[in-house]
Image (cartoon, rainbow, N blue to C red):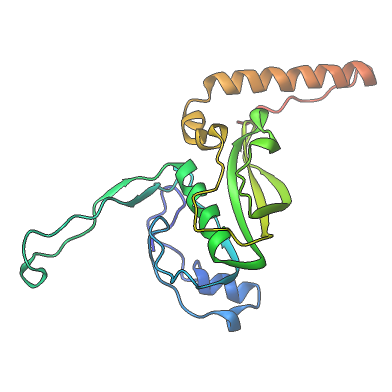
Length: 218
């Protein structure tokens, strides 16, 4: 699989799933790996997981794509030329919606789904995180990426079985406009800088004339 880091053409020898499991002394738990499309799960409906751990692509370093609509071959399969499925954009909101619906249907009771979600820090509101009636948020922590962006590590636990395999996940607009805001952060950077300056001046006025350097990184 290709690396997700920008400008990196090839993964390092130990930069893979096996390497990660060896690092955490979990290699004995390794079963196998396959590449699929999260929007078209291959699992049987009755299959159940103890946990799901994932880091969905945000569309920044990695593309957010899924297999497009199925096409009916006009000629018999044995006579058709090789076909590679066409791709279409996979919106961040749709991605999290599919993830939560899949977790609600395919986790065991008390099973957990863990995922990263990107946010614009100054617009963060915990009430706008993804929701599902069968899942309860039990942990939420932040990893700061730069002055204006961070990502939250969300852990949700399944509390009940869905009454039917329904599309019940609730995704708020704020969360899946991240890519657009990330690449159009001029206004956000300016506003964030003003907020940092205001906070700095407030703290300085409280402690006297101490000198501190304002952060200038993005």
